[in-house]
Image 1 (cartoon, one colour):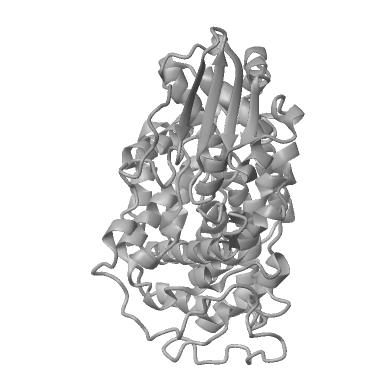
Image 2: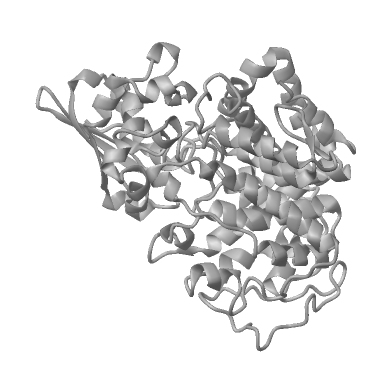
Length: 544
């Protein structure tokens, strides 16, 4: 039996890919010169480095260093961004706030969800400082960089945050906390706050795209065990914070240059456990604000910090990087079609994105009549890169060490989907990652029958889409299977606006109640037209 594959005709939630340019697009401010599309090291190195900020910045001929060109793009976002991009970015703020509240809710009772966030909040409060920005949930006022640390940790706590493909990073959870904290501290209005997130998110995902190696069919960051979210997110957060704080184009380039020395993160926790990865987005946001503040105070960055011989791209990626995805179209960003950030996809399940194809397949087989008790063995086929995260080491994946560790287990999430409580709606949900669920003997026994293997077709699709195939041998001797080309929520099967609204409600309502959840949703939607001080009012609605 072969189930129906998710196809490309599914409704998209983001208008960007259909709408192109819009009537409110900013007026172009000149060209950025020829976009470099070569692979590997550039000809710009320390011996021929240009003077820092070797051009007039705003209003003049754009400068030629990579950081300067990204900074010029970001500075233009202060004037206006395409309406489609603003609408998409606003929806991402709503999704992230819902995820933050869900991480404080009744199904996040283990140390993997609340522990790092509470540790970050305790540490931030102990350090003291000027109260500038609001911590989501608690309402505590903290210095902007520490509020970003706390909120970024919370935004990534459930692994429910959006994912950009093919860079395979989570831009919003790293960049939004910096944008909100800096905007609140500076008193920015809603339009600038949204523009700051859009610009920072765009820089973040473009850096991630520059790391994609078509020979590997993978991000070089990921292949090396580096967390692109925290590394690229730090640079994106610096752009967002700098924009919200009113930095000039030259200062934004300095903030990028400073941030490139701050981003870090390894992803071994995805394989074997540990709670430190929850801090990665918070640390990126914290460092991004620090970089912007230092740039405002006069610290400068290398003009060739990205492309130089000892710059960011070569230091992290060697000669396996491509400048084209980083720079292409920067001179035409008044056209929404050139933006990459809105192509980021939403998660329908609160687990590592590589587990989602297996969840989809298991749900499809269950809907077709499979009884979990009839499963003798199951083989989950995914891309090789995904298998290394959700299938190895096998002995740890079939018996996760914590509810958070279970989010990175192919066997556990397949078992959870097969055992889904259909009377409460099919799917893998927050309640599937509680202390009670991840130690459930029936669930663990079923997980032990699941083997994760590499699948050639999934390799061919990865990382532009996350596909999977689940083959089950039953007690009756039959073999049944289901394949998805693009997991639910991905490029081939995006979530609808109704599904996103339901996801936000499920995260927020248990803590805020129906009326305040409605008010928070309305305030977020109205953010692009809100006046100065609106971020304080918005985050005030999240206080539990």
